[in-house]
Amino acid sequence: YKEEIAATQQNGAAALETFRIRFLGTKGIVKTLFAEMKNVPAEEKKAFGAILNEFKQFAEDKYEQWKAGLESTEVESGTAFDYTLPGDPAPMGSRHPISLVKNDIIAIFRRLGFSVAEGPEIEDDFHNFTALNLPEHHPARDMQDTFYLHQNPDWLLRTHTSNVQVREMEKGKLPIRVICPGRVYRNETISARAHCFFHQVEGLYIDEHVSFADLKQTLYFFVQELFGNNIRIRFRPSYFPFTEPSAEMDISCLLCHGKGCNVCKHTGWVEILGCGMVHPQVLENCGIDSNKYTGFAFGMGIERIAMLKYQINDLRLFSENDIRFLQQFTGSF
Ligand code: PHE
Image 1 (cartoon, rainbow, N blue to C red):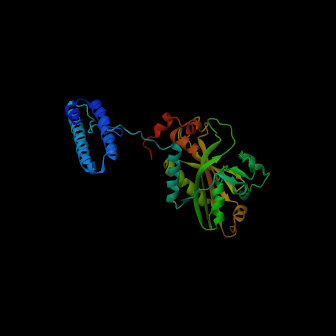
Image 2: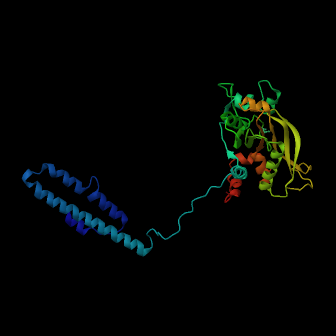
Image 3: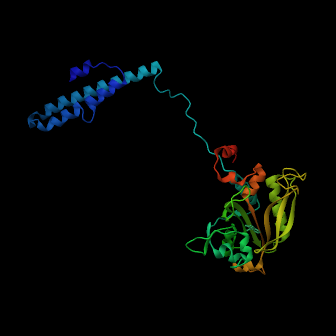
């Protein structure tokens, strides 16, 4: 075998591998010879072992020397792997526009001292409706087409993140200054303007002496930070069971600046949120003394704001995961 090894022509990687398998492989000659050890008489074992070890070393030396030679010729001929080449680029994801706008909104309210609170998307009737002055059979429940859970009609997919506000009030730690971002669900036909799920940021501020003036100024500051100082706002009276008085807030149209366009339907105004003073009964439902405390609440849809900000005209784009849509937000944080 030593002669055979010595005479082996060192040509090519395939021949090297054949050599390795024949001599050094798990079923190779070296292993087979070592297995013979058990048949060697005891007094000869030592000498036999020494010869085998020497042979094994011989075969391994040949292999290493061959391999080293092969590698250096590959480097010289340029067929070896070139470690100085730049790597393959790893594809980078991008932040979803809903997350971008959500983070913008959170950052603005954080600067006003609001903290972020989150809560369950599967909610019980009390936290989504009853505590908010929407008892069973209340007609205003129809405003929010609800998905009920089949197994237990007391459970539902939350229709707004007001459920988190209820949970914050129940904790009983006052004053409260929170915003509640999250996904909400409504049984609506999917179209360019509506979807069966979307995202909201709602806010709640409760303390002594909180007034509607605080509400207005907070929201005015917010839209100026988000859209720029030239934005104008107006409040229209509205109705929500959980606030009194209630209002809807419009901003001046970002696209036509009052000249008239499709986004504002030629009114110059775009509605962006609902708001109002927390109804005293809601405070009481959540264990807060309504003689001592007052508060305001507001709620907005993130999709709506993202559509205005990025001039997106179809709400479905947000949930289709079309890479061509998402890639347009690469590099934004
Ligand atoms: N919860 C309301 C909605 O989902 C929004 C809102 C929140 C209105 C707080 C007023 C006060 O439509």
